[in-house]
Image (cartoon, rainbow, N blue to C red):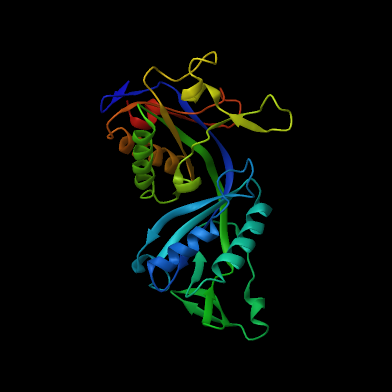
Amino acid sequence: MKLEGVEIEDTFAEAFPIKVARVLITAVNEKWAMETAREATGFGTSVIGCPAEAGIDRVLTGDETPDGRPGVAIMICHFKKDGIKEQLLGRLGQCVFTAPTTAMFNGLDAEEKLPIKLHFFGDGFEYEKEVGGRKVWGIPMMEGDFICEEEYGVKPGVAGGNFFILAKDQMSALIAAENSVAAVRQVEGTITPFTGGIVASGSKVGSKYKFMHASTNEKFCPTLRDKVEGSQIPEGVNGVYEIVINGVSEEAVKKAMRIGIKAAVKVPDIVKISAGNFEGKLGKYQFQLRDVLGL
């Protein structure tokens, strides 16, 4: 299979269930909304070693937010509902509540909601009001009053949708990966949780060292092409990046994968697109690249 002259491997990306919450952060301008969103989603690349997977969904205009101000939607993902609640309380309380000019609102229409009660910080001076038809709390603070909702929807989502970009050199792979991430950012309800949305250290389950839960995916390491059995690196490939996508649904992840791959293959010197899986042993979702791209 080929797309834009680039080989598409006949394989699948393996993903797994996860719980998802989505928060709308608004501020006086996009700069402060984005600064706050980045802080609130920090240390959220992979549940292998982070307390949650988190990332920026998309930038919002004033027409899309309850208070009519610029905003950024973020997503926080965890295996357990209690884990989502703990992460929301910590990240929103320490990173959003403390940031200049910000407000925050629930960004997910879900039957189940988690209470995240920050109004007690008001020490009895807090009050209730409505903003954009939503019940919110106003909490007096030094810069003015912080406005927030205190119930956030949580629902089942999908984590670990992915694809690999194999290129003739590292910089071509990086440019393609950057273009992919920019394209995925346009798909509402999805995030690319790793730093800048790009994974340099693609991993496999397990290790020769018993204390490691994951280790380097040696079959996709260009410098090991001639050193390991079953290398998946073709001759002439010297750079590989992975894009990992979490989303609120299978449909959202599939759309993001399709748009991301189509952006990647337009870059010169991209040789092949592949995906990471564990022979169906890790997660219940299998995104066949053939089906994702309609090939």
